[in-house]
Image (cartoon, rainbow, N blue to C red):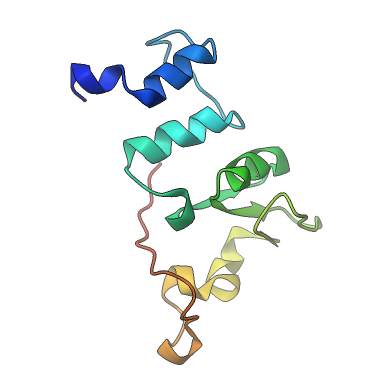
Length: 120
């Protein structure tokens, strides 16, 4: 990013949170961690899906408007996440709209199309 963007609103928000510039450490569940990633990849929270096995992390993303999925055996989701699945292997069955497994007749016209990009 250019020097003019380095002092943008997100940089000011990070500085106001007391995180030293260039420290390179900003961890979930801090909402700023999600905001930095969303800003970096230029994604809207409403078109982003986040998977984690920590309700604390999922809740933080959910509060920002991210579709958040708790992946944990034996636990039930609550209002702090969008949904709960027992295993990441259940994604095609539980979120067919995300994986493209849904037939055109199964698509919900209220859901916006989401481009899936996997970043590690």
